[in-house]
Amino acid sequence: MIDQTPDLSPIRRQFPALQQHDEQGRPYVYFDGPGGTQVPQAVIEAITHYLVQTNANHDGRFKTSRHSDEIIRQAREAMADLLNASLPQEIVFGPNMTSLTFNLSRAIGRTLQPGDEIVVTHLDHDANIAPWLALEEQGAEVKWADFDVETYQLDLEQLASLLTDKTKLIAVGHASNAIGTINPIGRIAALARNVGAWLWVDAVHYAPHGPIDVQALGCDFLVCSAYKFFGPHVGVLWGRLELLQELPAYKVRPANPDPPYKFEIGTQNHEGIAGITAAIDYLAAIGQEYGAQFAAELEQYQGRRKALKQAMRCVVAYERSLFAYLLAEVQKIPGVTVYGITHPDQLNQRCPTLAFTRQGFTPQEIASYLGEQGIFVWDGNYYALAVTERLGLEDSGGMVRVGLAHYNTREEIDRLLTALQEM
Image (cartoon, rainbow, N blue to C red):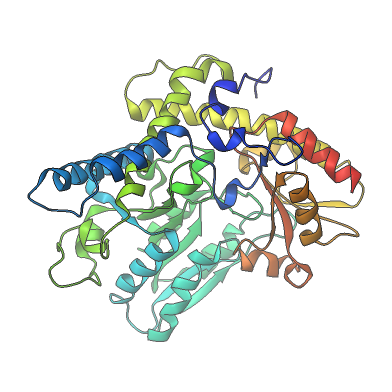
């Protein structure tokens, strides 16, 4: 935890959206980050520079194409730094995490035999469920791991009981985009290794809130989305190089047969990929420039990977403190029920994502009212259909979701609390 609220003005000034106001002159409050964060000016400039200076398709024998290819190469290196990947060739770009997961699930499906098993969880976004359910069409058996509706954590014993020598893949989220639970990926990876299964990790929700080290996690594949960590609408897949080499790809015949290119179907969003590098460099700068405000005795900045690690330590410390305040105060409002881990000593096991309902109001009514006050939150199931069904909330409109990011402030939380109290 931090002892005092840091000065976020140097950070917030970098986000043009945070300077926007409604008709009454009130600054907009962006608690909608789990669906997509705002972007710093550097990302906007990187995208603009690409479109003006280097806009071309790949592998051309002329200047703009060569520059475009170099920008994409740099983005692979940046993503490899963010995820601590061994090689840039392990980074695959795509339209979004959902498309990448469907693409690779089909490739993995070509390696399966009838009766092979896949494990999914009730805690996941449907983008990490539906692509695996689709493989039932070719004889795969999909099993469901449950979560405890009182602790909001995966039942690892039940998950372990599902595994057999026929288990080929476990698909699990790094963190729940609905209720914030952070899953013990290292322990799940060990379970997967014990039966010779691959581990597919959806890190979309976790990526803006904590460091990711694919080598330390022990997973085989990990997917995330740049627009959830202050970048453009681009999806990213990391896979172990030997697996990317072995898996068959659905591609056009002239396309490069080597990874990562064989999984990048068609022309990519080059300008968006250019923005990824800027987003990652922005994150690295948090640790370099503002780290002392967030946590004491931080390591000396040296190199992008080390800077990113330091930056995410800063983000975790600040967001956890901010979320603890939000959680304590929102539970004082009559009729509010919070879904997710709430014990103060367990906040390290969750992201700063608050899901709640309020007696007498539908989630849609709450989100609409807050939107009228210039406070942006989500309502519904956020495509985490299995979560709202398991909690018995799907038929009543799901939940309200308030997602904190490192650019949010206590003053913004106070505006939210006041608006809720005045409903």
